[in-house]
Structures are given as structure tokens and as C-alpha cells.
Length: 102
Image 1 (cartoon, rainbow, N blue to C red):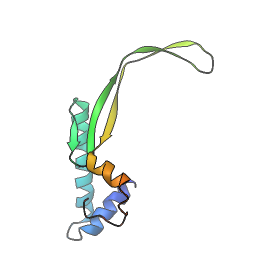
Image 2: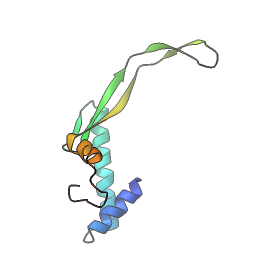
Image 3: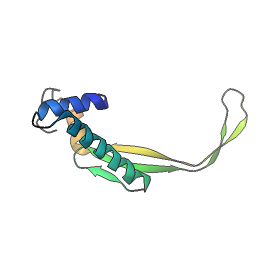
């Protein structure tokens, strides 16, 4: 599902909202998650999962083509861990048509 498909589905489920308002809501949610991760906070959406940031140390890597050693800079990467309810729903065989939980 793409972001525009998500916005479309939410607009269909909430006909009392204008499409532009749904788009602003989705953009705001993504922006707030991003801001929290940038400052190092963890974002937990109960039943869905948690977003956090993993730190990778600087290291010496190897170019697979030439075998030459290269320095790889330290970096921060986003990480997502699924919540229990989402894992159970994925593995429990609940049909796609049942949207009662989400």
C-alpha cells in the first residue's frame, strides 16, 4: 500500500472528512514520527509496533568488487519492531476483509 492509497482508504471510511484534511492528518503523523526519531525518541503504537533508531559504529569495510578496504562512516538507521497484536494477526490467519481491529 502506498501513502496515496492509505489516504484514499481513510477518506472512503470517513466521508465526513475532506480528502485534503485526511492527507494533512497522514502527513502530520508521519512528520511527528520522523521528528521523534531524529531526536532519538522511540515511537510506540500499541498493538502495531515500535519505531526506534539503531546506531551503527564506524568500521572498516571491503569493496566486494576490488577487495580494497574502505572506511564506512557511523550512521543511524530507523528500526521497526512489530507489536504482538500485529504479529498474531499476520500469523493467526485472520482474513484481509476483517478490518475491525485497525
